[in-house]
Image 1: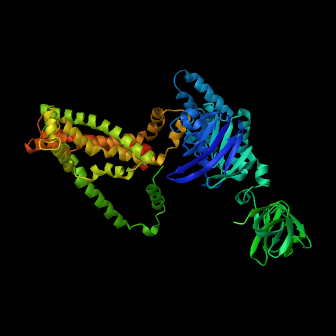
Image 2: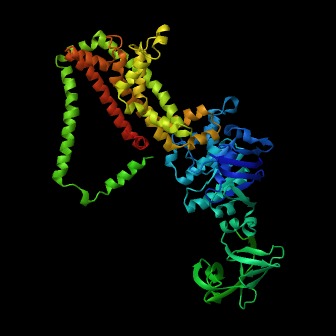
Image 3: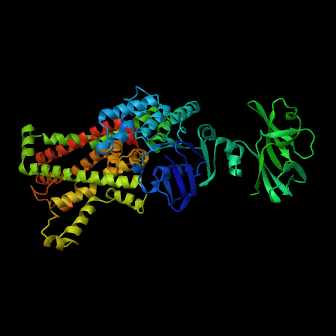
Length: 346
Length: 294
């Protein structure tokens, strides 16, 4: 099922949580909504589910305008951050709940509901736990039951709010891989919210980066990482360093020296240069480069991260060096960013 | 599940150091005061109630309970409880739902209003009904014209009892429902359940023990209320006397055995309530902890 969010605005007590957000989700896609807290990602998810109603704008499921429908009519599977399992029901009753509350011919016989529940428990690899109560399960198991319960109603769209947020790192990684497998096996259009960029980049087909109630960028992990389209995305995804520079006739200047980078289409004036610490070319001599004094150096896994003071300590940037690179010990390091981008000075 | 007060209290208690532990004699004195106080003011009266009731033997005890006026008082008390408790269950659940589950204007006002019967003297709540429904009251003329008798009749007693007991269920449920939030309800709705199905299958089971606890307290108060009911009842023997009122009348007539026999029933009710309450607290302490506000 395709999902189209069209010019949606959402206010809570006059305070805007989302400004004019539009997003197209393809059928069968696995989408991550990624952003810091307060960026509106959970609000967007709840709007798609029908747990909130948009102040303005529409949400389409296929060609149908879902924004006029109640949450019951939308037939979405929602997995809550804290699972929201019904504590007085067994695992099997939890999973069967969505079928049990149906009316008339749509409601399968009790036998069939039990069979479906067992089937789904198999799918989430929890066979044999039908009779347990939620309190008797681990966090990871509860998460799986919550997913099985959401899938029991054969939803058009599967929505997950911080699905791994309450779990420890080991279980997180395991469940992440497993969610991807389930998605590929069932083909549900799936949207999940996360503030963990690793999770988003690894798991999702496309990542929607959000900040302050707006979508900053939508793209594959490669798009988002290699060509961030805003200073926010540069800073939020992965590591980044930035320097204030000046553009003159397509030439980039740092203080009073050109640094050997050309930006022929950039307007002259002040700007900010962004690059990745690991994506730099180290130079020996320096005519047309950025040079700085090593202020701090630390070992990070297989590389060495040095902090450079540029222009007499007014600016600091981080650069990554190979562990055995002589520059790591030298007090002066010259480099030129490999992949970089200019943004208008804020 | 436990409320913050309980949580912060327990570790403090557990980590109590030697430095703040009272000396042996001090502890003995404190405990002695507490026990003597309870014995004199609670246990002794309770014993006397039963002693006086059986002063002339079990035969007289049963006889005085068999008296027509007494039986009518018991009957009326049960009737009043049977009407006011269900009313307050409905009211309590609605109010708790409204206050705990969504935002609206006047919410703080409603919350305060629910506590009103606790803060106002029961006699005053009785008097309000007299002013409202009495012959000289605001609605007196209209009621008389339509032949409706409220004051000095069962409806008045029920109204006064409902007024006095309405905080019990609501006060138990509000903190419990607030604590539980909307998550379970949202989950049920997203799975296609209607509002009613959500209420029956999810909300009600989640609060059932708190509800039972509230009903227990509400019932004890409904059967034992004196002040408010005394003002509106008119004390008509065999017609508008509830058990507490009947105890007073019998006692004023120097019928000690009769008075204490009826009193022993009320005391028995109190004991049963206490036992059930303790059992509930033991079994579902964590769920009820959030609600121990009074």
